[in-house]
Image 1 (cartoon, one colour):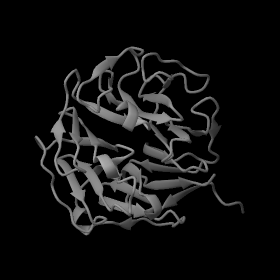
Image 2 (tube, helix red, strand yellow; image 1 turned 90 degrees about the horizontal axis):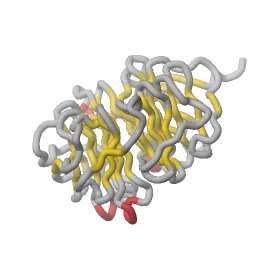
Image 3 (cartoon, one colour; image 1 turned 90 degrees about the vertical axis):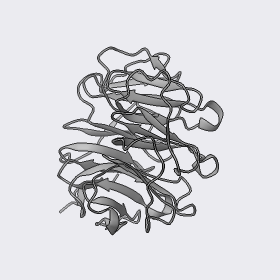
Length: 298
């Protein structure tokens, strides 16, 4: 019998966030705390910290230099937590209030510049410039403080560009989050289920209106032949941005040319996908609501 393409990974049942952790594999934010999946192709996740196990972790991020720089940052409904020893111990950083964190995005040069961003559902975007020790709300021009998703430019060191998808629109900062400007996009696009950069192209996934693409950091937007309408459940990329992956309620597809062409995964698609990421070879990790973590082998 042929091996099934989609395989469930043993571990927690609700997966809210998936983040790369270098040679250590992948971090998993779940209803039972923070877990790790070994990149070697293990069939089970492992708990990172028993102390966080009672918490529902809605966002996870590791230093791009992890595990050499062993920094982890996680978010939950009551704020952020930070570890500097691979998750053995955790600290609550200084922050304006205990905000509900929906996503964490770090500068590609986080190891050197210490810059990171946290999207919150009530308090806009929180920013750290000291590797997560403290966070501040930088929301000038951000007209909607319900921020659902974030993307940091892969050329952040040069352009300082950050994109925020809010409940009512899309916003851009070109000065590292100090100030924001709303972008003109189809009125049906918001709210967004995801936003990311792939091979220099900005891609936005709408909860109602398909995918949107921009080659100029959001000044103009276009549709392409696939995923022109309908619900986008989740959107993600490989760690280097070379592979783009999208999930709808019924389809998962992968693109290696920033959305110009797509290849659908084979077999029955996992249901209830809420988080997704790709590997450089086109394999996929998908997190679901109540159906666990799934891996698709390219």
